[in-house]
Length: 385
Image 1: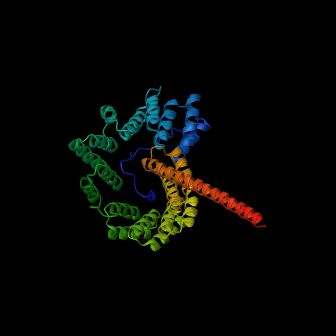
Image 2: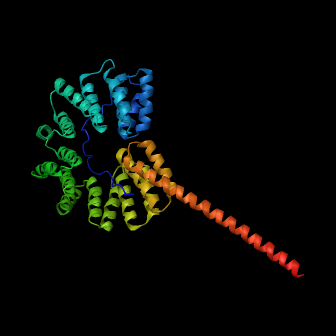
Image 3: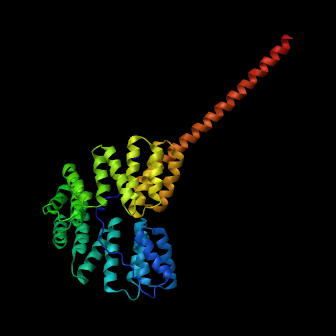
């Protein structure tokens, strides 16, 4: 089972949507906590709290919307669509909230390959709202999924024209990469690099772009400049670059610095675990993963839990790996990689159990044979006497 790299980079194809918390003085404590848990990546807890808010009639449209986002993050796409639809059908759905919900629902339709439905939501957005970078990107992503390449290209160009940022370039690149059209996406990365860095964050962002382009020499240079400007995120990314170059010693140094400087060191602990795995020190890897899990949220937590399964496999502890895989799928039921891994682990555990039974049977048979031999020898002795 391959390990999963720490989630340092912008996830390809993700919407750049703001999380609407809907907080106001009359909100209940439970609703406010749901919004906070959702933002922090505590999706199961947030979902329960939003369902409680819905039952209590508290900000029903926003609560359905929050429940939909939580379900989406948990990989429960059909349930997410149901919640988003309920939100749209609720009373008092403001225009901005409706735009947000339609965008999310279209994204989920894409996840389940319901392209016509995704396109319908994109068209609804285009009809009711001024086109912005997010809508252009979502429409382009839908068109690309439907093999409408010219329409996709046109919408992506509009999206980047409205929002010529490093994040947007990486996002469009990711959409093309998912369709094995890397060359079409690379030109956006090149466009993002055509300017010059103005500050440490720019150097870090340029480092992310070079990472995707596998240009590690320029990547290292940009990230070192970001670090000189006190950009903490660059430490974790430079650690990943060193890992790609096979320099686990410098990678470990970067991850250790990240853990000591970042407000949340989960990425650093995940990186240290990768270094440990590379060195074959699986106990240390599990220790770092455990430390990371205690502070991780969202995608970083998922990455750590994924790698935990991989480490137990490498330790040949298939029983624990199987248990961890089941727990993982309770949280992320749509992860196809771990689903396949679960099937593999079931066979390994079953074969191990069968081998143990056979071994026990052999031992038992051996004991019977030995007892029979002893009896025979005793009978012979009596006969001799």
